[in-house]
Amino acid sequence: MNSELTDFDYNFFALNPENINRVVLLLGSNLGDRMMMLKLATDRIESDIGVIFSQSSVYETEPWGFESERNFLNKAVVVSTSFSPREILKKIQIIEEMQGRKRTAGFYRSREIDIDIMFYNSWIISEDNLIIPHPLLQDRRFALVPIAEISGDMIHPVIKRTVSDILKDCQDHSVVNRIPDE
Image 1 (cartoon, one colour):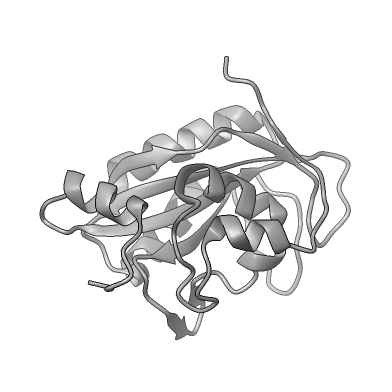
Image 2 (cartoon, one colour; image 1 turned 60 degrees about the vertical axis):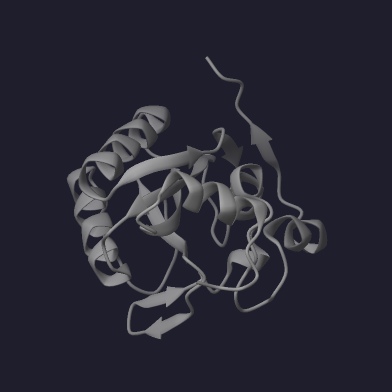
């Protein structure tokens, strides 16, 4: 285990005595019933990947990297899991396909659901189709805001700064608005 444990790490591992892996996922949707898409994906993550330890509020965000008439809804979840990063990626892709996601290489586009692995413990992974931490996290306000809400003191293993500190210095000034709880 990393010697630089934060309050978030202590809380997580105290509630997970078997030292199960911690994965931070970011969910997004801008097609169909966006709130329902997030709920379905969250339910599926809990049934197929692991116990959701924490989840952020839902945020409405501008599309990033492409134009769209419809904004995204995004949220982050922290999941305790026994699965490997590669197994989680496969399960995420199945969840996305079940909810209508059609993958196209090379460009961003609107989608029913998008689920990205942001962190897996404090691991650094660079493989074909799997890079953890997410390589653009520090550049995306729509990802940093929900993650900072639930695990702001988590240290980015490459940048060596907390998510909250990275958010403060983020150069992306796109609009990220919290959706009030219903």
